[in-house]
Image (cartoon, rainbow, N blue to C red; front, side, top):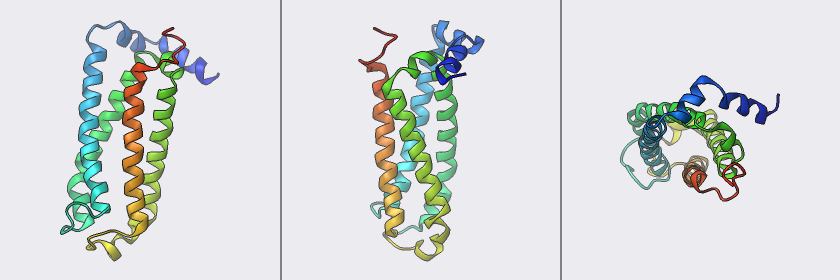
Length: 169
């Protein structure tokens, strides 16, 4: 089965039809998605700015991570669940949407960035934890995170305004 075939099948499931036909489900789920995104991005931005040495320079990086990670993880979990439910509203339309594809690629790259950070430079955090400015690789991870999440937000917002959409035209 092709990816399009999978999305077509998904569009016919009970959950997808319920999302598409409900007057309130999509706006509520999308609102939850945006609020979770705000929570996640707020926390992630603070972490990234700390890596860059722009905020909380007097606190150890590990302390900032310890304080913010539960909130970051909660925002991310709610964001993923609400994003999946939002996707159920019109899977085929999202499949054909270039901005949705850009968002998904940027999400994969952001995930890869987190994995590389945590499996690399983060393992050596005790060496630079108290430094006002983190080492280059940590700062690079912070910059990449900020750029990728900006791309994710812009692409996500542009999904609604896709002038290339085959289904809408």
